[in-house]
Image 1 (cartoon, helix red, strand yellow):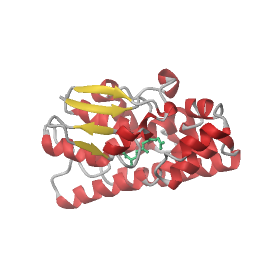
Image 2 (cartoon, rainbow, N blue to C red; image 1 turned 135 degrees about the vertical axis):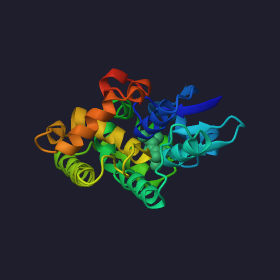
Image 3 (cartoon, protein in one colour; image 1 turned 45 degrees about the vertical axis):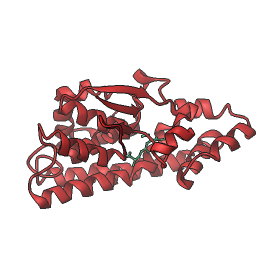
Image 4 (cartoon, helix red, strand yellow; image 1 turned 60 degrees about the vertical axis):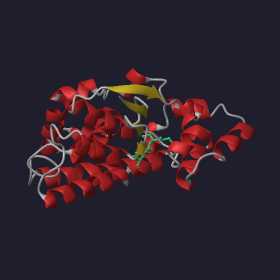
Length: 247
Ligand SMILES: N[C@@H](CCC(=O)N[C@@H](CS)C(=O)NCC(=O)O)C(=O)O
């Protein structure tokens, strides 16, 4: 059986759970508690040197990281129902969407880490913080942990991050969905799955007003169809406060 190291509230983990749910695939669930820095343990870093979740362990014991890559592997290995466009151009468009959304993650961190991660990190002593930061593999994430623990993002920074998510994601989606029913053509694909966890957070906390059908009718209709899919519930894309304490 497949084994998934993940977090209930982690956006990248949510993508993989959605993909698994669409395909009706069962998996063994291993929750990684980000507030305990379990993803920076030597054993975890050996499997994913980037020190982030999700991480998938295949049935033969090999491991894979990067949510977009994991989803592509799942679709290639378990082709039904297909989640990648057949047309090579649309398939390339799908990959560009995933890459684009990946590039917006820093803006989501500003909001997502202000929940349970901040509560825990702010309690660490300077010595504990230094010891934990030393194990974070990337400079960007070291900075994000430092900010979360000691210098919470300001209102101006939150407003800027919100603006980048609204224009970089919602505006771009509205434009695309005015041309095709889904982000990478005529069928629901990994491009849509890639955007779901971000849109969920915009809808529930970051910018619910921007999701109104009067403001962005295409995005609002897309979001209603996404939430009506059984996989959305199986994958437990739930409000942050319903999954509190999960990091
Ligand atoms: N590009 C990666 C991003 C993974 C990622 O940022 N995971 C977050 C949770 S959504 C994480 O592990 N954060 C903890 C940290 O950075 O310390 C992917 O798509 O898998």
